[in-house]
Image (spheres, helix red, strand yellow):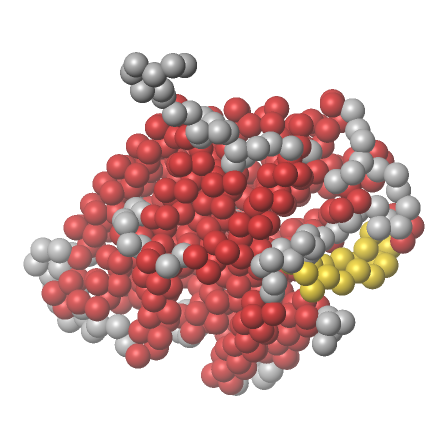
Length: 510
């Protein structure tokens, strides 16, 4: 079974499922949902098999690798493989997709394109997300990077809120602009590389020799595209609109998984392929990340729309992730990768529980809620756990991620780490204020008759809360997978962790 195309099979399953669901009769909506859920669960089962077969001690850069000629005239290959960083993000996509399908059971009824198309789009999006994480050819990476836009554009534009058309077009224009810059950089890579077969393979590009100016220009082409996708301040403005107008399942996959492609691209492409340019740009990127942390948190405090508030918290969190990546320490990058994984679950829980609340009340305004914990205590309790994870409370999953990022950053950029710590204080403000305004007090007439979480909703939320708590106490299994890949990336960049400075005791010889 060593030659079995595991990753191709993994990407093909949801794609086939998407075609099957889309081809089903319009009146078989329930069957379409069930088939979509079944294909997503089969995909998850394959990911579990991959995780069990993955060897964290292997010296290979990528495992389950496949390489086939695709466009040999331009050196383009169909090449896929995973390291520890890619594996945990593939797992994130595979876990969240069936959860989003189950959570969206009744969300597609108002869509102009029908229920079956909505669930077909979710499965197609899963294929594209898996593809971009496993691609080991830069051109193939670019293809999946752009292809992700298509299903998400239709999910927002056809099944979103009142301003869905505006949000979908804004999302598309920002993403296409970033993709255009990346395409220019991809073409530049082909020009400066030696050409020939497999010219775009990561391992071949890592040994190319280019001038300083060329390296910096290529780095900027990729980095700006990834900064828009993440998104990083100041190219973030599309996210609050897109996340607020997307249906809850679409918002989870957008913020919880798709946006991770931006930060994944930074650590997968920018640092190993352009190490000197990455070190040259690091101080500016660190500054932008710190601004994003504080800016996103401050704007979250002032939001009156619950989904926009969650979106702005994610802008702050992506600042932390970028900070850890460009601190260029093993601790910081391990924290950032773990943060990508953990953030997906905490944000998914917040968006989905907020979606359950909106479906009951019919409003996204925080002021229209209150007293929910008295009429729906389980809903309120799960919302509190998800919120506390978002503010990185010790004992919940995001804490260790944020702690590692700050420790790794402090090793090289002390001032940036101290300023970023203020984001934790601001996070406690926006999360606790949101909980107080929506969950405490006397329930108004609009919420007095609410039912608590249904069986389906409980099945949606329970796995997320379980992961948040489990990884809060025992993150070692994920870190064991991540750490070898992080150490390899840091070595490729040509940096080493700063040695700790221990002040000499008084009276001792120096």
